[in-house]
Image 1 (cartoon, rainbow, N blue to C red):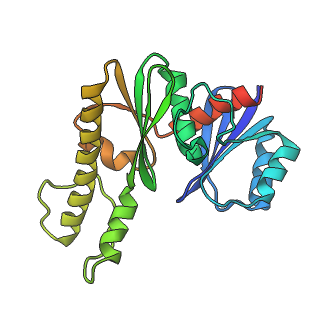
Image 2 (spheres, one colour):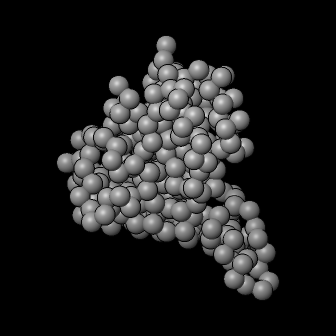
Length: 242
């Protein structure tokens, strides 16, 4: 058996997925990115390979530690991937978007894929059937929308996300949750419909921590996988850490 640790450092959370061969055994939310935290993971799982996707300014000592103990790869625009990035500045593409694109190409190589990531931001990532990542869109995520209503107003409260919402809010809290959750759902439905009109052999993948709040409110029953980014990271690791 071969163990691979796939690290995903996002704006909200830092996570690590433990792969035994090609199977995810568990996903761990990290308290921080300190050397002690990462060292504990290395001692517990004894991985042969590690890969890091980071969109934040993480602890620089982390990369040295992983490189000294494992076959390590840091995801970047220089990473070998199974798709091309014919955009103006490929070096500006977020590591998380590269990982999601890799997963789409790996699992649905014959299709035009739209991968929607529901994280701190909502990312729309389109990869055509020729394996070209040609771009997409970025909009505020669920928590960012909820916080902005509280921050930019004098009296609106900060409310928590909820999937069980009425069509018509009956108080301030439900007006906010319905407005934000349904607003995001309609935004996502709109993007999907626009892409469907333009592309045939079209596939949609949904991932990210906010799936639980959004998936049930979307018109289409689409492929939803909260661990998609980790599966993409594992596929990339296999190419770059043979």
